Image (cartoon, rainbow, N blue to C red; front, top):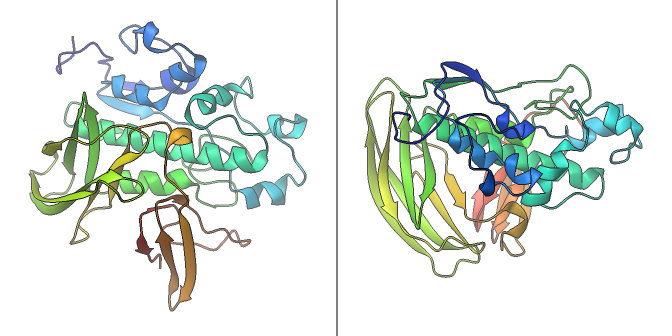
Amino acid sequence: MGEDGVNGVRDGDRHDWEVWHGLVAPGFATGSPEYPTPGDVRHYRRYADDTGRFVSEFGILSAPDRGTLDRWLPGVALHDEIFDRHLTDDPPDKGDALLEVTTGVPSDVDEFTALTQAVQAEGMAFAIEHFRRRQPHTAGALVWQFNDTWPAMSWSLVDVDGVPKAAYYAVARASAPPAASFRAVGDAVELWLVNNTRSAATVAIDVELGRFDGADWRVERVTGSASPGTSKVVWTGHVRQDAAHHAWASSPDSAFPSARKHFAELGELEVGDGKVDVVAVEGGLEVHSHGYSYGVRITHPEPTMRLEDNCFYLRTGKATPA
C-alpha cells in the first residue's frame, strides 16, 4: 500500500510509459475492467494512478504545427507511407486508439494535427497537475520530450522548426510556481493550490461553476494559502459533472494562470459555437471570445515568430498575448 492508502507504483526514479503504450504493470492501473478498449488503457487519466517518487519520463505523441508539415512534407496524407515514416512509434496508428475515445478518429492531416495537439496538451497538463498535488511524496517530474531534431510526429513540446505545440503552453501554465488545479472526487470537485515558491502564498481565487453557454453560473471568491513546497485543498464544492458544465478558477491579481476542469471527453463537450475576433494592437494581438472557445491558436507562416502564449481557453472576454 502507498502512503495515500491505495495501491500504486512506489518506485524512486521511474519512467511512466504505461499510459502511452497501454501497459498494465503490477501495482499500476491493475483494474483491467476499467479499461475495456485499447484507447481506455492508453488514456491520460491513468496518470492519476502513478504514485512514483520521481517520474523522469512521461509523454503523449502529437503532430507538429501544420505549417511545419507543409514545409518539410508537402502533400503528405494521413497514414500514407511518408507520414508513417515520420511517426516515431510502432505501430504508427497506436495513438488512434486514444483519439477514438477522446476526440474521435481524424480523417485527414488537419484533423490529426489539431486533435493530437489537443489531447497532448490535456494529457500533459493532467499529469503535471497530479504529480504536483502529490508533493512532497512525488518530488518531481521530467517531460519527454522538449524538442525535435527532424520533422516528426513525436512526444515533443516544440517541433523541428522551433514552433511550440499547444502542449508547450499547457505545460507552462501547469508548471507555474504558484498554480491552481481541480480534481474531481466522486460527486465533489476540489480546488488545489500548489506553491513551489520560497515564500508562503496567500491568494484570492475566483471559483466559477456552470454551463459552457453561461447558464446556471455562479462565482465564489475564496482565499487560498499554502506553505512553500506544499500543495493543499483550498476549496471543495459541487457542479454537475457532465458535458455541458465546467469549473474555472482565476486570480483577480494575476497570481497564477487560470485553471479549468471539464467533465467529459473532448469530443463530447457541449461548448457551443464559440467565435473569436482578433485585433492587432500595439505590441501584440487582442483576442476577443464570444462564448466558450476551446484551444484557440494563432497561425502564421513564419516559424521564427514567437508569442508569449498561443493556446487559449476563453469564455466571453479577451486575452492579450504580447
